[in-house]
Image (cartoon, rainbow, N blue to C red):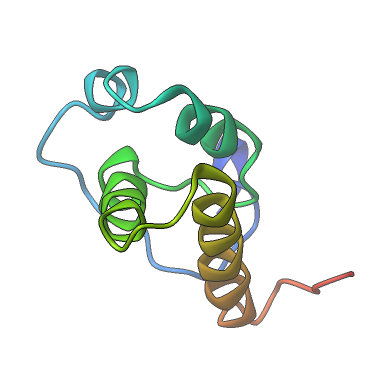
Length: 85
């Protein structure tokens, strides 16, 4: 697949809600992370990860680290992606 989604073999998913409205409700640090993410994450899935990390008492910076780890793990499942440190 090409275009603004990039070149990936990962499965795309349909959304039942308006992702832009959901994006607008995200906390600013999460929106900033999402804008720089390597993958086209849904705002809903990012918010789920964010809420779980924050509920576990993680700081905003630690939560961003968790998001980066989740993204790295997802990228490792993509056979077309070459991870460069």
